[in-house]
Length: 175
Image (cartoon, rainbow, N blue to C red; front, side, top):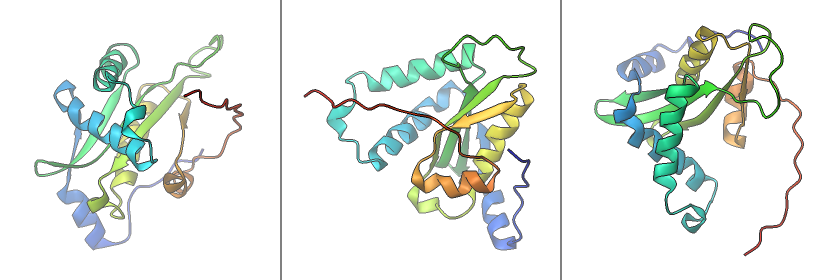
């Protein structure tokens, strides 16, 4: 992964992005992060009935645990009092014994990169990603992992992210 510069040559776009406020979210912002998380599932065509009845509480508990145990940070782009987008990131819990020293292998994870449809194409996701990358770098991460949608792949590749091998075996769902 290479370092990147989030500046853009277009003055009007920079003014628009700067007009937004980028805030480090706290627990009082959880409803925004959760709404954006559910909006992503909706954008994938996930039927509402697939969501657990306690999905909101599950997401809220995940955020609380992440803040207390995984150095979770969420950043929100605000246009006045309207959220334009958000991103969350945290230390990634690898699914195997982490036997290497953290200075040699400490993974961060970025999830829920979301921009409201009315604000897309303005560089907001890139600015939010830059904040997440900076946070993960500041807490000592040596690598950042994310799972990309097709829509986000161009942005992530442009920021230096590379495809990595992951294999899956999908089972048929039982109704």
